[in-house]
Length: 119
Image 1 (cartoon, rainbow, N blue to C red):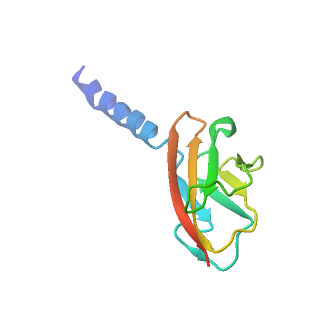
Image 2: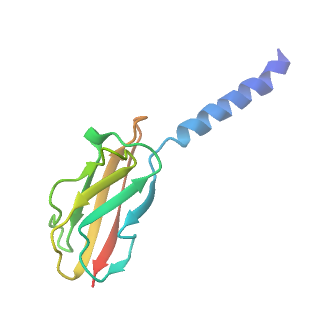
Image 3: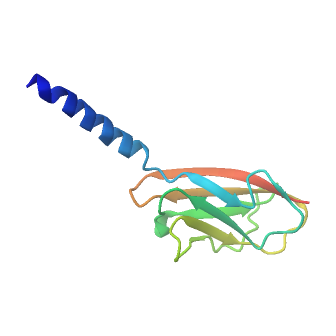
């Protein structure tokens, strides 16, 4: 029975590591986090490390007063389940905050935000 203990411990560690690694983490964005852009982007794109559940994933872009400025069409891309996107009208110069909340297909919720500037 003692020879089984290391195997059981190893399997438990592997199982816990797999669970912890299952969150959809933000990998990159367009525009980049905390960047300045010369012209208003047509859309914001957020790329994640895990496939997203479209029905429970959302993104918004707000101005410095907290007012929503995106077109309200935030969605997971049909051809790429790692991509969350939202379109924008022409934005005047200023600072904008992107707020997102996603559910990965393994049922883990993550959320966050970042800013970018239109110069």
